[in-house]
Amino acid sequence: MQNKRDLPWRETKDPYQIWISEIMLQQTRVASAIDYFNRFLKQFPTISDLAQAEEQEVLKLWQGLGYYSRARNLHAAAKIIQLEYHGIFPDSYKEILKLKGIGTYTAAAIASFAFNLPHAAVDGNVYRVLSRLYGINKAIDSTEGKKYFQTIASETMGNAIPEIYNQAIIEFGALQCIPRSPKCDICPLLANCFAHNNAQVDQFPVKSKQIKTKNRYFYYLFLSCKSRFLIEKRKKKDIWENLFQYPLIEYDKPISTNELLRTSEWKELFGNMELVIHSVSENVIHKLSHQNLHTKFIHIEMDIDKMKNKYGYAIINHSEISEYPFPKLIEDHLNKMTKNNP
Ligand code: SF4
Image 1: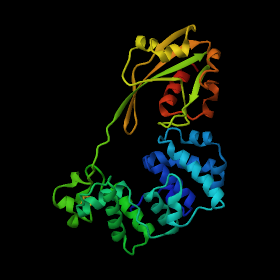
Image 2 (image 1 turned 135 degrees about the horizontal axis):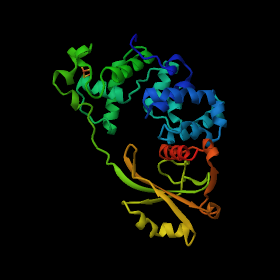
Image 3 (image 1 turned 120 degrees about the vertical axis):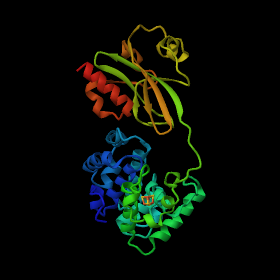
Image 4 (image 1 turned 90 degrees about the vertical axis):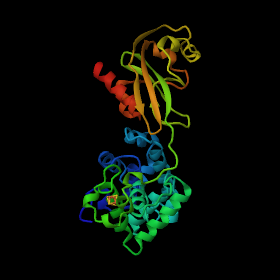
C-alpha cells in the first residue's frame, strides 16, 4: 500500500466521514471532491449537525457537485441515524445497507474501512480489474453479472485484511488498470492477466446496454428589474429537485424566439403585460450523464412584482444569491450577469 494516494478520508476510521466521502466519490473525481469534503465537514462536523440542518443549506453546500439526490439522501439518512440509532453510525453491513442512498458498494466500503468487516467493495475500478484479470465477460450492469463479480471479489479477498484489500484493488483500478491505456508494461499481474495476454484489454468490462442520451430544450426566463429577479424551486421528480432556477419553458424540440412568444406557456405567463426582451443568449449545451440540455436564457426587463404571486415564484436580489442552491447551469449564468452588472 506504499503507492496509495494521501486523501483526507483515508486518515480516519470515523464511519460518518467515510460515508460522506464515499457518497461524494460516487459520481465525482477525487480532485474535485476534496474541497467539497473539507467544506462539508467544517459545516457539519457530526451526524447530528447534518441531521439538524435545513435541506436548503445541505444542497447549497453541494452546489456544483451534481447528482443532488445524493445530498438529499445523505440528509435523510442522517436524520434516521439520529432518530433510530441515537446518532451513532450503525456498525453492521446489513444495517448500513438499509440507509437511504447506500447501495452494496458503499455499504461494503464503510463496513470495511470503518469497522474492518469482511465485505468486498465492488465499484467501477474493481469491475474493470477483475474482468480484465480473469477475462470475465458477464455484463457488469446485469443482475447476474453484479452477483457474479461480488462472489469473485469476495473469493479474491479471501482472508486478507478487508480494509487493505478493498483499498488496494480500488487504487489499482484507479491508478494502474485505468479505463484507457492501462499501464500493462509495468503491471505486476501481467503474466496472469487474461485480457492482456489475449490482446483484449479494450473489450473489458462488458456492458449490456447503452443508455440513450435524451435531448431537452430549456428556455429560461431571466425576469429582472434592476438588481432583483425571479426564481422558483424545482419540485417535480426530475433533475435538480428542490434546487432553484429561473421560470422555465421546456420544449421537446428547438424553437425560435418568435415561436416561443406564441406558445401557450408564454401567453399564460405574461398575458398582456408590458415587457422588454433585453437579450436572448446563444444556445448553451449543458451535458448531464444521459441528458443534453439545450438552453437559452431570455433576459426580460419588466415590473416583476406583478409576477410575484404566480406559480410560487420568489423575488430575490443579487446580494441574496448565496442563500439559494442553484444548478451549475444557472450559477454560471448568474455569475455572468453579476460580472456584467456589478
Ligand atoms: S496487465 Fe494491464 S489490463 Fe491486466 S491487470 Fe495489469 S494493467 Fe490491467
